[in-house]
Image 1 (cartoon, rainbow, N blue to C red):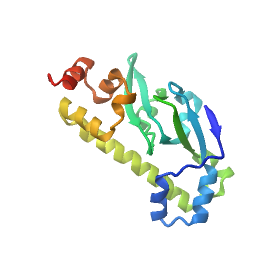
Image 2 (cartoon, rainbow, N blue to C red):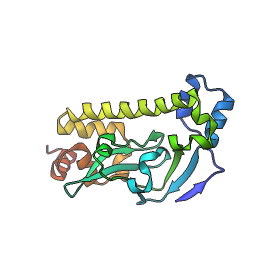
Image 3 (cartoon, rainbow, N blue to C red):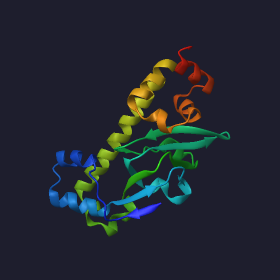
Image 4 (cartoon, rainbow, N blue to C red):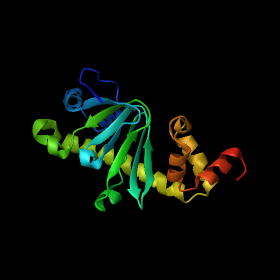
Length: 196
């Protein structure tokens, strides 16, 4: 993992902030509170390393969020370019460890947490709370999409995932995708071969 303080790439979520009336000065103050890191393929962060207190936005790359239940990995979400990493708060409440694994070299924007407010005056402002609302709206939208997807039959779930995440087959293993779609690997192989 490499800290990068000089490179400030374009961030799509800033467009939404401008719609809330962020001035260029407020946007610049927010940018100064952000940090950028590059995680190597395979790097994993777990909840014991403070993952619960950060908000991560993928600038470029892929990550998966998973947890362990009954000895098995359960894939909760995938995140790609220009998406926030979505954490399973219902699992966090049950005091289980959550893991973020990067499936390719991934550049991430780390958004400060509530605990960082004393270091960044903007974080105490109404505007920053509007920003956090945007993050939560993204989270809720992802969860609503996931719930709707889980009501589909297995073939339509696979089609939904491919349409939503065009690069998913390039970076995600069949086992990980099957877990996310709540189907067996065998079912997923049959769907992909047109035999389902």
